[in-house]
Length: 589
Image (cartoon, rainbow, N blue to C red; front, side, top):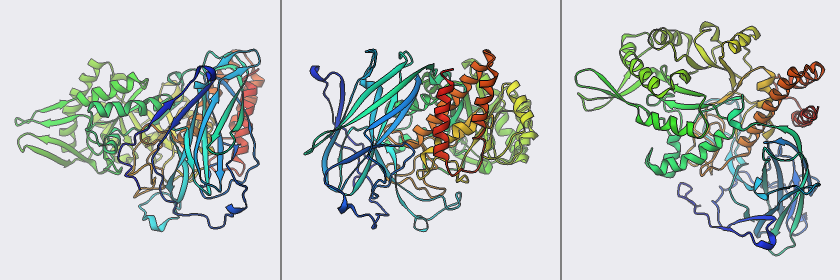
């Protein structure tokens, strides 16, 4: 098996001949090797299948198992509706009892009934790769792999459109269409061709209806998305020096993908190991703390400045969340010049040691932020800390840097203890925030979101989670009157994220949503889809209010209200499908 920590070299051959200018063909010779299947089905009778490659459009809610024959009716035509500026996805699944050495894909331009043309480049075709996953089985807690059922989950979207299909294998193909914001509304059609070595090509028709309503660019979405970033995982996986030019080059496409999903928050580690090193790649300090021989403190903000500016240049500029004045274990690190070594101290909020450590920093940090113009968007961020520690921290923060306020993931249901300090509050899924408190927070310009973690069997974005749950998160967020959604790990990769999504603690996939080399995932794309739906709901609500369309507003609110639930309904996929169709009908009013 290949060492997946090594760089995989892709050979790209892009051929767009003058006589076939209406198709986009991207043929890639090699890709990374998948893991061995830990749970190959022995009940499937592939021998009964007719020879050759079989393929069909299928729902994006289907997460296929590699060794299982798809139980679907073959379909060669897809219909979809989208707003201008929206991303919409589809899925084709391929399966064969024979080994097929090469399958390539072509897609034609999208042409409307009036002759308007959208280039084939608005669509991206990516084969879906499998990764080892496990099961929920109670959720949180350290786990031994042998104690949990393992299997392969179709999740990673590989940036290839040429693939070999092995015998007795099911292989999904994910289609992403980004509708340009200036598209003329109407009905468009395109065709996907599967060129199969040794067989006749297969053709599939895409029918896309573009609605006369525009989704603004992601930077203008109001949905407050907060997925925590881990730049140190990128450096480790690719074996580059942190903050070297190679590191920045690798970070750029990965974080641009996050910005394009509407991310609003920059994750900063003020000090080392703010979460006690719970991830495979621990967070280092983005600010160097030095205690001089004379007892004075000196802080080097250069990494912090470069990271924040880098993310802002990508379009993520609403908030800087700084972890943490209350880290797990209350441990802090600094370089002691008199000892010429790094020192670790334990300082509990409220103690003299804590004040001696934080007061000089807050004084210099807020002056630095004022110079940068970032002081009003900076939050001191805490993750699931207890009320006693939080109250002691706030006593200090309110005295020395009250302008910051706090960002807090609250699993203690303690938000009422600090009504004016929590400028950014995220509560655990299923926890309620009183309606009056939500209204007051909105009136004050504060952010209120919810989050899911290892304890939530539903909804979630584990590698084994049904894709529809990612979409549901967006609908629930707006149905429960939250401003958005928080998830603690965008890219805290495990040791071999392309091979095995399991971790020493928590269900598989809990620590990351995307893969190395800027590979997206079914989970990330469906989460983004739900966020788009939430934005569409917000836009329609505002429009119905401005046009005094009370009946339509009431009907829309009734549609959305059915997603204010905390237990999974039996028909979630159908519920979402019907609601999305209704949403597009509302858009035509």
